[in-house]
Image (cartoon, rainbow, N blue to C red; front, side, top):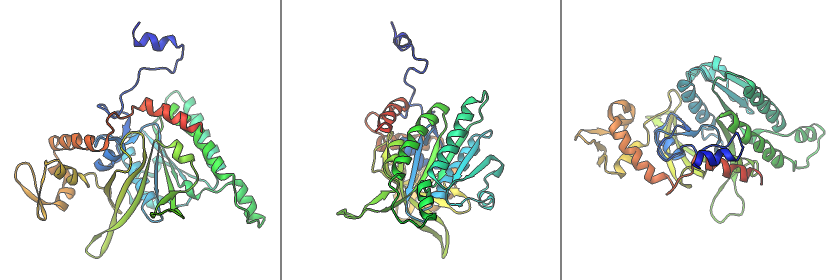
Length: 350
C-alpha cells in the first residue's frame, strides 16, 4: 500500500498528498509586484501572497495601506487578464479617479461600500457561495479596506439612540466572520488582503503597536505585516513613500523580519527596490562608497539600479539573490500550504 492508497482509504474526497510549498516550487503564491516584499512574505523573490489565504497589512494612519493594497491588486490583475478584484471599502477611499491614476482597469474592479461587520460578512460570503456554484470561474481577488473602520449594527443603533456604552460584541463578530471566511477562501482558492489600523499599546515597557479589532484577524491571517513609512522625496517634492514592512505573524517565513519597499504615487511599487541590500550582503554586489559594483565590474549608483532594474538584475543575479533570501527568511523547514491550512483551522476554532 503506497501513500495514495493510504489517502484513499480515508474515504475523504478532500484528502490529498501534500502540495508543494515555499520550499522549491512557489506556485501557491501570487506576485505582489515587489521582489523584496515577495521574499518577506514567502521566502522567495518569485513567491508573494498566499493564493488562497488572508494576508493582513496593518499600520497607523497615512502609512500607505490603501496604496499598498491597490499596488498588489494592480499586479494581480496584470498577471490574471481574465480576473477581477472585489474591493470592500469601509472608508470610501477608492474612487474611479484613483483607479485611473494608478492605471488600474476600473471595469475589472467591483467596489462594495460597507459600514458594519455584519454587512461585510453577508456580502462577502454571498459572493463566495455564488462563486463556488459557477462551473467556469474567473479568478477573483478580494480586498477589505479596512477592518478597523467597520462598525457593528449594535454600535450604529446605540449611536442613533444617543447611548455611549462600549460595544462588547465587535471582537466576537470579527472572530466568527473570519472563521467562516477562512474555510470559504480556501475552498474557492481565493486570496484576500485585509488592511487594518494599529494603536499604541498602553502600559507596555517599550513602545508597541497593537492591531485593532481583537484576535479575529490574528488567528485567521496566514501573514500579517506591520507597516510604517517615511516620505520619499525627489528634491523638495514628495513622490511616494518608503514603507518599512515587518512580519508580525507569518506561517511561511521567520517572524520579526523587515524589508523596505518603494511605493511611488504615480508608478506604484518598484519591483527591484530592496534587492541591492540582499546582493551586497551575499557578496553578489560590492558597495564602493556611493556606488555599487556589479559582477562584471561596472559601477553604478543605487538609484540607477532601481530605475533600470530590468537592465541590471539579470536572471542569473535574481536567482542568486533568491537563494540568499531563502536562507535569510525561511525557517529551517518551512510550512507547506497544507500544513498552514491545518494550523489555521486549529487556531480559527479557538
